Length: 584
Image (cartoon, rainbow, N blue to C red; front, side):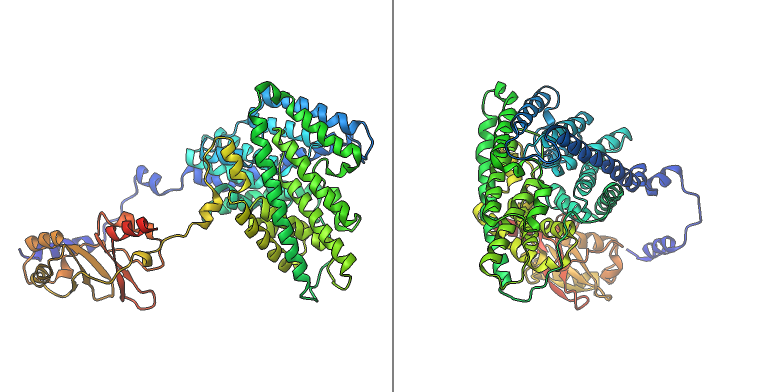
């Protein structure tokens, strides 16, 4: 067959087509969708709205605390017994009768909304979380406002997305965007909120999602700082590590934090399912009994463990407690939080975790000052590092734990001790408690949500893992079709590679070669018969799963060297890839 008709066709294709206006359907295909145009703008709006709600939430907690427990609750006050117990009974009734989805901290509920319910969080749940958590925390239950703020923000984002009739995919993405906004406003720390949502809620991200999360977090923090100011929550002097032995003390703190995280996790993992398994009528009084027990701890001399305890953390950082009292407060806070949270009282784990860590850190710092006065570390520095240590060990968010300490203190001179102690606590916690606490709660609730820690630890396979030397014929692009047919026939190969003059490669099957022979003369160069679509360019470091969609078109994939254009490293086939996955 003459190749003249083919050349004429190619010439006609290469000529520039005359201009014609695009049709409406073509414009709709290439223009940004309505969802895409609204996405970033809505992220800012959600951030502002979440910030206002979180500010209102925190103000409600403070007002309830002042009205019920007073501005300075102390041991011996009868209301320390009555207020948490009565509030617990009232909150339990609200949860059981009206707001069942408000139970828990809010982190797992947000993940469930994302992975199970397509991002749906009802506005009723937002109201319930706001009211019940504010009542419980304000009345002295040992819980924090950060996790509920995360769910409140996610609920606001879900409501806005539904009102605008956005697509299901966009609806799912708005839940983590709102979660980051709520957590950022509660912490007054946008970087920590962004990292936590990425580490524990969505697990992976794209540029578009990250941009929206950043915009929402920054918007909510701007709103929060307009009310509270831009100063960090805690202030300690800049530290200087003049003596390397100081790092030994921080390492000891990491070990202590790892064991404390284990005790805390085991306590919650043991008590929570047992209380949930009790008869349904007991759920109406479990929060009340927990409130009475927590109030008893306060009544008999340790009122510091009631509520979030940020003022107590600040006092510990400035060395106002002896190290033995600090240890007692840490242990009693573990007990109080276990009682409050396991009873189903709505509230978060962040603030109690920071409290316990701060008490442990301050106790190590106070002990050091007492017995090793020549070391230069301050109690405040140890308390701050302790906060990050327990956050890393208990909540298992190592990156968030580091940046959280830096943001809440505004002190970047503490970075080396923070990283050292946090990593020790995190590794110890992983060794002693293989399942993270949020995943423990997930299994107790009968859900199957993705484990972000397992996803981070999975070793991704790359092309180099399935790569093997070239064992198929290689044909030069300038060789004729007949030569190619002879080479393929002699090698008895079902596929072969074609090396082109520009350093690129093409994969062809013998069936494709047969078709080319039927359409062209035997002396036609094989590269002139190749279609415009070329074999994809692949490199050894690319993910192995990126090859699957290529195999229906190209049964043999050449893998090239990045440093030397056109140089083959080897080839992979579909069987090679599947065999590699079976072995791993």
